[in-house]
Amino acid sequence: MKKSINLIFGIAISLIIFGTGVIAPRIFHIDSEFIPGSFLTHSTMLLLSLVAIYLFHKKGILIFTFQKVKFKYYIYGILIAIPAIIFAHILVTIILKIFGLQIDPSGNGHTGIADFNPLQFFLFVFLYASICEEFLFRGFTQNFFEPLKLRGIRISKNLFISMPVLLSGVLFGLGHLILLTSNTSGPIIFRIVIFATTLGFVAGYFQEKHKSILPAIIIHMTGNLPGLIMSFVL
Image (cartoon, rainbow, N blue to C red; front, side, top):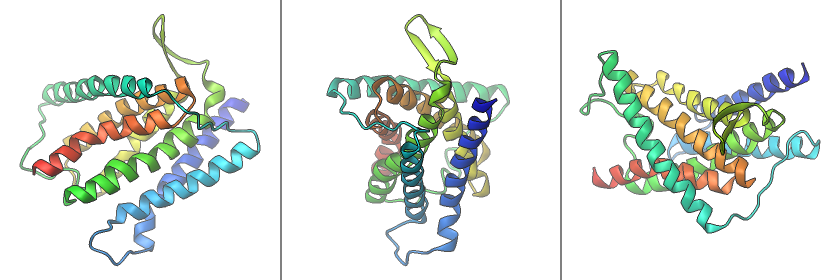
């Protein structure tokens, strides 16, 4: 029963932090054409995540480690993230075709970042969003669910995806449903949710394996790399 209560409590806090970040740009405004509203969103998420991590770590409820990781493991993470991204896109394409849907290349993309120039995308999405979102979904959420790590899905003899990894990945993916309040098309939102969930599983697995949020941040950046490249191309 205690684990069930902790699970609900952890999800609730994660949603409160995420929701507060989402409404922050609607309350506070930065008078700048260069700094987007997402900067306030991610700054709020990062600040509240750090506060939550500190408070629960101090009480012994959450264990947060920031260990040094060998360079080769960052490379391993990237090499696993890339095929995972490709798999997610293939899976989404198949599902959309089954239901007779498709992503219109001439339609609206991710409206929250569609108008970013390459420098804005690099600073506020590739770097800043990757860091802030990982501190929330991996740094706080996944570590909060650590007592559930013995439960999960065993894919093979050497590959076990724990419940904390699964939960943080799913919450990370579902968090992108906030795009339903924008002009982003349904098929694109679906693709983003599946893509983010898959990326979250990989990031979470490497954080749990190496007890450090650093590989998760690098993997998150890898997921944002195609968007960065497209921002330069377009």
